[in-house]
Image 1 (cartoon, rainbow, N blue to C red):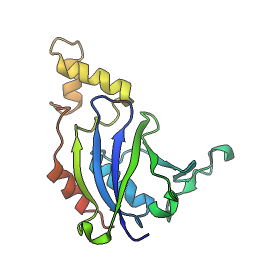
Image 2: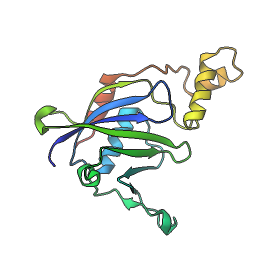
Image 3: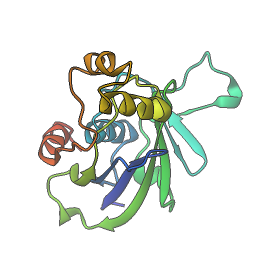
Length: 183
């Protein structure tokens, strides 16, 4: 423990890929990692989430949920403690839209490799709008905003705030968001 991890976070089921490469301390708690993923991807943290690491589910336990679907509290869980040698894991955001993020541990780095952590090193493509309907809804959304003759073109543009560039990714803006998160 006590190192940095370089992670590649990619939304599953979309082409071209929407991804981010971030560096975080391995001692980071899962709630803070959740905040990092939200900021790096561009989500607004409006929905529930869950991690699946090494076959175990971490999130916010719900006492009204069935015992067979038990979720371990993420509150004090650290990334290093949960990984236990695993090189990849999943993060699900918005159980309705079911945004599955595939997260790969690319490498371990010394703590002094990046003094400003968390940090986004690279990424590609814009985060889908919240509540767009998961990957299938996002594909339909992109079709509508790209085609001025599409019957939903104007409605979709109004709904998302007037414009949407699916290739947009602003590394500086992402890192400004990440700097608000203390490791």
